[in-house]
Image (cartoon, rainbow, N blue to C red; front, top):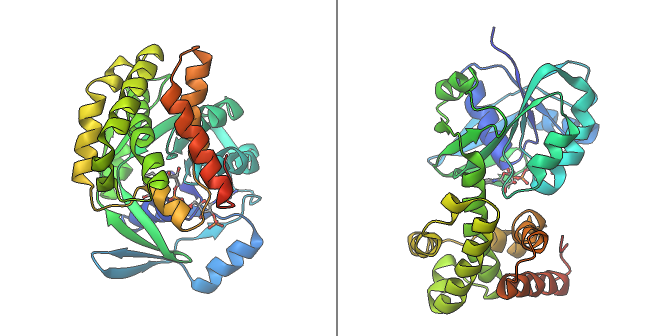
Length: 305
Ligand code: NAP
């Protein structure tokens, strides 16, 4: 019998992982916020994944954080700003040698979680898969993609990657996961805040070419100073390619703001600005961008952290 996957957070990515693992007969259990959420889930009778327009139902078992079963493998599928608090609720259940897989976007939350559970192995992930909730316990698989996983302290791949292969989750073990996370963060900083401030799709940034180019220059300087030269390579070219290839899409930050949801700004642009301060870099456009975004979020009555 293979090890049970506990999935902390049954939102978009949590559901996408839990349902695919369950359908491959890999043992999986959801950990929901509290008894009220557990009752709502039990009334719904399971998770629904909509793939290629077809809905499939998966009665994945669920529990609350205070259940007593030990946890050996934990997928953290909440937002970056919820990760630390959510892990604290289950930390006492982690078995010796437990492994955590962290799906959060940006940087900062992974290190915070890892510091909280020094006894566990923390595996960082970076995913280009896309999913969104179109109802409670119901998720649409919107964009097929890829997930890179890696461990900054231990380069050897875990054996359970075979569960992901069985579940049809496209993935690769990465020995430079931090480079991937930094690169993704830089792309996000160059694109997402501007799409919010200009209220446009990604393609709308083609009209703000100079602004994007200036930001890419500053982000390149930041990545190099942070010891991430590979993440800095041809950054502007890659940003322009992404803007072109995803011209019709709204960025995740634009969608969050449009739906009046909290953004992950502190783990993206906020993290970049803090790193620049730490290295005493003068990156005026990046700092201005953060101030403009914070002012904009406050004006809309949304959290700015
Ligand atoms: P999401 O749909 O908002 O799901 C987050 C889930 O975490 C929610 O179901 C929430 O519960 C749950 N949660 C929060 N605190 C909890 C706690 N203390 N205990 C138990 N559950 C808790 O978020 P998402 O879109 O899946 O994003 C997760 C992370 O993946 C983010 O960092 C995001 O940037 C990244 N990511 C997402 C995508 C995507 O396409 N969605 C792609 C790449 C990366 P409630 O349901 O009770 O609110």
